[in-house]
Length: 191
Image (cartoon, rainbow, N blue to C red):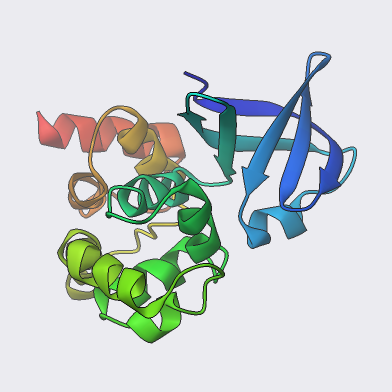
């Protein structure tokens, strides 16, 4: 499996970005926000989901690990494939989508291309508990942990922590420390 691609943006078309990694171009399907922020000729890193089907293989890329984890949750919902999940994530940043799901806002989800009312309601019903807990933790704890832009949280998730467990582990760790120090303290507190 391809976990991430790190290289230069060689081309952009449709909803895909071609990332040149040491002379090999990887076509990565991305959400609208990531597509807009990818600049030709500049370095980019996408956390990827490698989708393998009988007839094809596709890479779906995300600028943050939190967005990738939300994508992986979305595709567990019956009737939501990778393209529909990417369409849902194109509605806004991953935190906005997560909030909509947690607040049972199926009308927001139906704005995604190719997602009807029934699928949107299924997404909300199936995932509101899973994503709502993380939001509740961040609201009630007053923690400065952001699920979308926290490198320490992404590192903990890469080590196998769930989003909720990672946020809990970082609650008592000062946000002004360097990322490596925050991860180390969170791991020590958890052991």
